[in-house]
Length: 498
Image 1 (cartoon, rainbow, N blue to C red):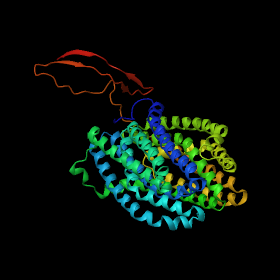
Image 2 (image 1 turned 90 degrees about the vertical axis):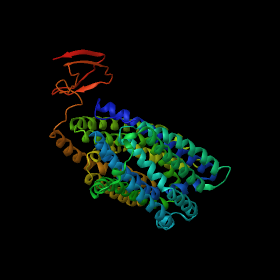
Image 3 (image 1 turned 120 degrees about the vertical axis):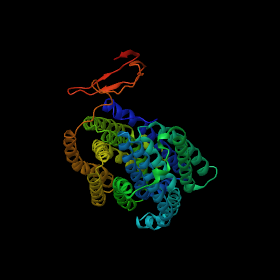
Image 4 (image 1 turned 30 degrees about the horizontal axis):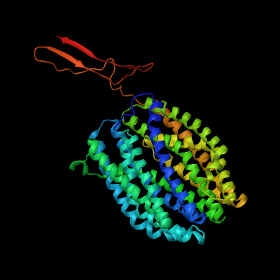
């Protein structure tokens, strides 16, 4: 249900909001694990490598769609924080129109260019047929992916991160069952794995729409909400396009890594694919914190609470760094065990290379955690330039490292490109956020929802007397110059007379 992120202790609010996001990411990774396990064990390492060879291309276009919808949600969160219901509905309508247009383009164009792009990426010939099939079917379901991302972003923008988790869990369970059925008994190959994901995401879209219809009347669009102006489109594209391009820029760097991997052979591709599956589970925590900070910042920016933004971002940085250290240590200790879940016997070289990549990535998680949190904070404030530039920095660092180090030391050099890209990005993000942090200190702070001196208009009976009989069960934040405390009133009964 709708929840304001403008009250409560910042670190608790961010953590509470991020936990369902983390669980959702874990659930999503688990069903991707199921895909990999079924494909790898039932169809073999070659088919697993073929699916892995499509990851960068899918991320290039579908990642753009994800970034775009995340950007469209920021004006919604800002309007919700400002308690502007009409603004929320108008932003939702604008995002629906733009998401629909993007879905049409992706569905029509992307399947046609999938084969030529895979060839341009120097995909090994033995992987080409299955990689093309998997990519084309995935792109044909781009509309389902786009609208599930957007509807989930809308619900999260109004402070509800739990409901998307429920729908995602249902979708993932359905996906696992369909993968087992389509790849196993029906023997539809990698195309069946792709189709299972498309069907599951389409079901999740239906669930989101039904939830909005039944439980969120504040998001029910009226005829006047569809009167979208150029200013509305410009505002949403100003935030959405940079976030979409940022994801695509990162994907281009990943494509370069894919090219370098393809020249190293199928074992290197399989190792990178398998390590990426395990790595993505660890990164899910850091990504969840970043998204939570983005929504938290957007709502508090709309509610004119720069003081809460300053405290919350600093606290989130500490949480991210602490989590990164723990995650890195776990991958070093147990990475090879997790990798062996995806491959059968006789794949010792794949396991060795994958574990090496996990160690190199884990050593750089501290930088990735700061990257997610600081970038999310700037995006929540409506800043677009610096987050986009950091994406370019990631691209350059990843490309240079993958090509140069890959040619010099092989697979370890390609794997090391990830950590180098993260470090390069935060070298710009840290001073950029410090400037924004100082700027927030100069902004006026809106009063809390209720204070000890807040004026309340009371209309009573005409004879001049009134009886107040109310029960307030939710804490009321009271703003103080030196500190904030909570005032809770329960069972208040007074007789007021002139």
